[in-house]
Image 1: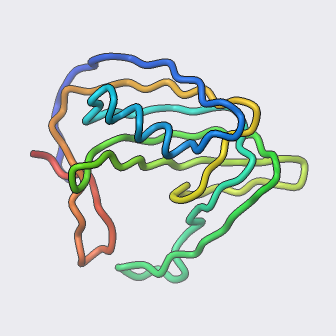
Image 2: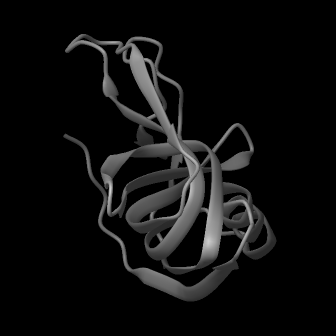
Length: 144
């Protein structure tokens, strides 16, 4: 385990509108406002998303299992923003459901808002970034 202590910085209330690309909007905001370290919660609906719903087997590095949906689903999500290779990296996990069931996972690719998504971003004064770790196959938060 590794950790840092910090305090809360700016707080953003964000509305992502129907048809907008959720990950692109959050990345664009992070660039525009220079959000380097933050966490967020999200609620609303998505019309489509590509997400990782788990590893194929319990091995490191994992082989990811991809799922997708392209129907309207309510979503509750939580994530963080740290930078990797001079760009913001959005790490978003969410549970998206409708009357047919629930899909939960890490939303990594195409993610389109349906009607509206509300996101509440809390900036932190903790110096961290994402650094790719070949041994585990992804980019964990790394403190500077």
